[in-house]
Image 1 (cartoon, one colour):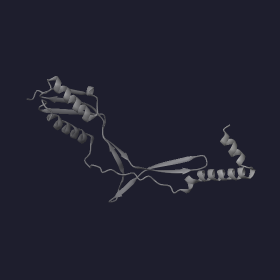
Image 2 (cartoon, one colour):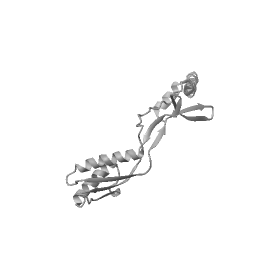
Image 3 (cartoon, one colour):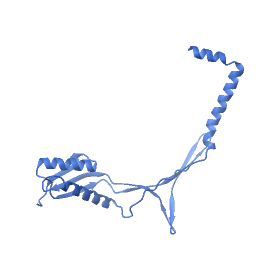
Image 4 (cartoon, one colour):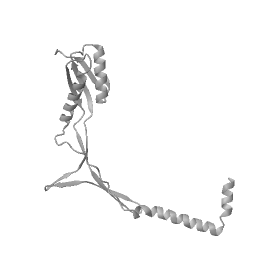
Length: 176
């Protein structure tokens, strides 16, 4: 045993030991009761501003337009047509309030959606909207017959859409 441990043990006489153990026990009881003494905070989710006209179709169209505008500025690309496919529609996540009750052996939790009232109507509070995941893209451009242009267009689209270049087709458009 280390020397400091032996010295500490010697210093604690019978009275000191019992006082120390009582103090330690009281601290333990306080730690166990502390969660019950503190006021319970209910989570207040932050509502993000919602676009009333938001849809997966609108989101996809905006992506296509922005990608088209950017690609047309690349050297040698020319006129661009873009088609993007998405995995699913947009998903809305509703704000929830979690209430918990604790007994000796059990912890019970109850989850409820936060309801807002406006003009006599009730609706669940939307916490956030998840955009659909991009699955792939087809890009046709007048310069798409050149390998260097295909590479630049594919790399730019992959970076902007967050997908692998293998999920992007770049070809030459018949429009001039």
